[in-house]
Image (cartoon, rainbow, N blue to C red; front, side, top):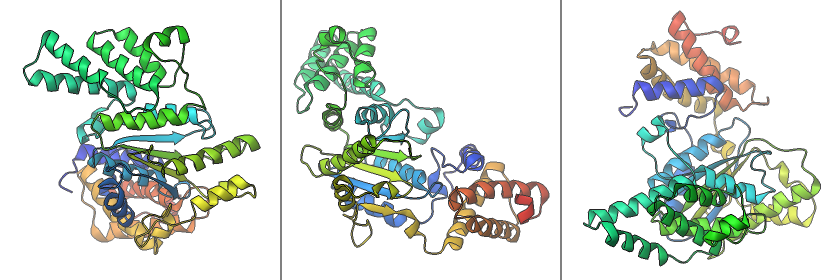
Amino acid sequence: MSELTPEVARRIIDTVGSNGIPPQYGLQFFTVGLDPYLTLIEDEYLSSFIKQGGSAFKMVVGSYGGGKTHFLYCVRDLACKHNFVVSYVSLSPQESPFHKLELVYKAIVRGMVPSLSLQEFLSGYEQGIQSFLRGWFSQRYQEYYSKGLSGDILREELLNEVEHMGGIESISFMKAVKSAFRTLLDKQEKDFITICQWLSGESYDRHIHGNYGILQRIDKTTAFPMIRSLGQWIRQMGYSGLVVLLDEAERTPSLSTKQREQQLNNLREIIDECGHTTFQGFMIFYAVPDENFLEGRTQVYEALKQRVATVFEVLNPTGVKIELEKGVSEPIPFLREIGSKLAKVYETAYLHKFEELAVEQTIQTIAEISYEQRFGDTGYKRLFVEKLIRGFHFLRHKGLPPTPNDLR
């Protein structure tokens, strides 16, 4: 626990204790049971196959409060370690419904982040394509400047490099990033923002954007080429690739039959894209609370069921489906181990030392209460960590382990 400071520990405790959701940083201090999955993902994919130009899709299945977001954040940290750009997207019915792929592209672009340090996580950080463009320009400028170039010579070298950039499927996307680079070089901030609005899927005006060679809007017909172009550009920038974490936080029961079929078609197409050579350097995770969305008898349902039938495990790392609950063979010992780790985080946060037997009794009591409620609306894992922090507060102030009545 030497890397854990009281400030970081307090952020972890406050986030987990408030609503049971995982914190943006610090998961490694209380992660339990995910190592087999994470090791396979790192060894089989992030450290080799995806970095070498492969692509892969995994479907993560876990109940509400069952650890899906926690798992995706752990994957994010691994991807950053291997120099991937990562985009975490919380799919929502309003902003990023999966049956509208152009809005999913918009969410991916908005959520893009490079590898981040602890300080950047804690102090706040910029995300999105606008930040990436500025970072790309700054990196190239500093590299040439460090070689002793300046003035017109530096400018000419930068322009020459960006003009020779190719290998991007969408001509409009390629012209947009090139034009954005030039506007930064010429300090034309207004033009830069205008281009970024299009790249972010915000708006398209033929008369305005056409001046930069951008001749198409981003819609359902161009969403896939735009996603492919985004990945191609990211690899040209020197990153290993793009890891997309799609987290379906809530089901949308009000979808029409047509919307539901479009959602399934989009998912099937993404899975198929991962088998094409034009889709290089992508790893996509799609987290869902259950597999009920696959229940149907039409051709699109059957086609998708076949694509996600195989199970990801040690003996079959090419499997698609990651079943988080099956990774927990003994729930109470599993919760106790999480509790022991969180107790150390809590002690660091409050500079407090628990009496060993009292904290063990607290963890055991809350583990049993939480697991008894496993068939409720909230997953027992989330319920456990939320109640546990409340139990630690009680133990610190009262000096005694809480009873079940105290916790209610």
